[in-house]
Image 1: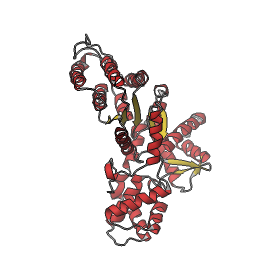
Image 2 (image 1 turned 180 degrees about the horizontal axis):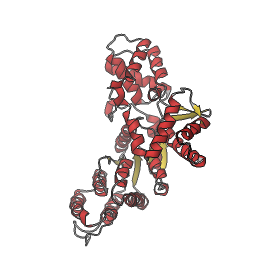
Image 3 (image 1 turned 90 degrees about the vertical axis):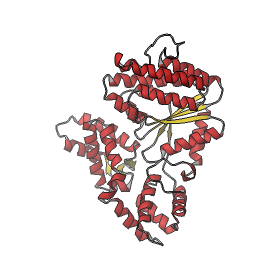
Image 4 (image 1 turned 180 degrees about the vertical axis):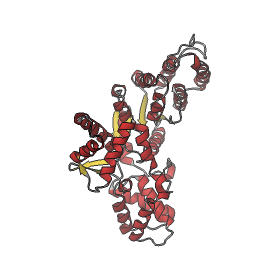
Length: 389
């Protein structure tokens, strides 16, 4: 197994998670549409691609799209239609879709984007007429008629929604798109199944914008960190791929130093260990590799966690998150809720205590869900020792 840090992994480089695959398959077989809720860097995208591959081997159609680079609803619709093509939409439909999308793009300057999905271009018998809603309804009906189950995996939808929100009529358009997707899920549920995932949780986004009802049909599924046994096997396979022997004491030293055994953190520490270019490696080398990850040249490994605070939250909430994280990282064993409330009040002494309490509750929920903090025995502490240090 190659050590691919930060990239999507497939094929022999993917570390198998049979228990998780079985859980997700069971929910899909029962007709569920899924929302993968897990902290960033646990391998959600790689897992979703493996799930698609597994389902295709079982006779399903399955496609995954990443919509992070989409500018607006039409870009999203184009990727969705591409996913439908992979899921069984025939060539004639694909040609009609291409013509319709071109016509919609020409009309973007003539209407508000909030109505693009339902923009009526004329008679739907003409491949360049009708609306995207009409066309996609017909296309989904075709997939449903085939009686072959299909999965559509949508990655990074909140990134698109955040981008749209900053555009003219953004909040209205965001709500319209989410409601449309819910309508698709409810209208075509016989054979078409969905899974949503992303580095920013869709659940966090809709809660923040009071749009929870648009995703209340989704079953929440988690992807946990590796178990201790899985983490040992993971490190053994990394070592074998790099021809670096990691005996039990070495693996124990790595896991003890990392604290939170998600693949990404194990991979970057292993990478730093390999860069020491020592054969054999000793447990003391783990400390040196770990300290290298805390040096300025390794900052890029962790900057995405800082960036997400700025992207995901308002300026006020991002500042409050930084206050909470700064207070928590100074105390490795963690802080009780009361101390965190004191930290927020100290940063804004004129604020209404009741409002600060509500903000604390909301932000702690998101920071735990996104993998920054963990709550144990009434204490809130950093989940990752690397992020904390």
